[in-house]
Amino acid sequence: MNAPNVTVDQHLALTPAYQRWCSNVSPEACNIASYTTYLARVDHMLCYLAILYPTFVLRDEMALRADQIPNDWETFVQQAQEARWSPRNIEYVVNHLHVTDLFLNDPDLATIPLEVCNFLADVIADSWRKRLHDIFTSATF
Image (cartoon, rainbow, N blue to C red; front, side, top):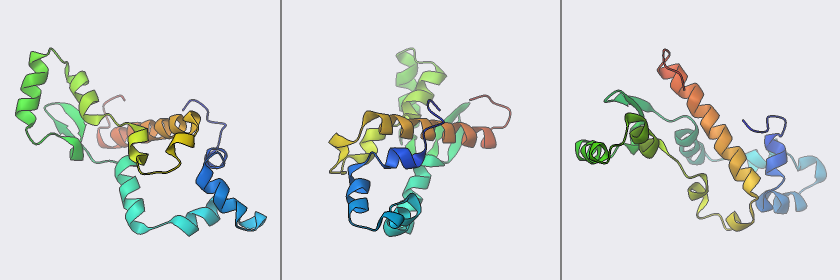
């Protein structure tokens, strides 16, 4: 990760929703644990796990997020090969994730500092590398 000395708490403090919440609670309650308890829902956690800890499968010798494989896989691969995409290019296209697209319904998205989105991208990438290593132990990611 780019800035390992910067904590989740520090990035959370940059978000408008957390700032608003902290302005309405006692100072001792303004912390990540209290905010998490206030917001946490099981359905949300399961959705976040699908992002942070996805299921990867091996398909045609490529490590792919299982829920992102196109339904018309054979056609997709044929078109990619015709375009001279390498297997790595195909993995990239299937597995890529636009972090800000996850938050299109966040009314504060336009005011979230880019460094927060970059931090989230770094955490997701780190999590995926660890997940891939756990599943495909002999490969390097």
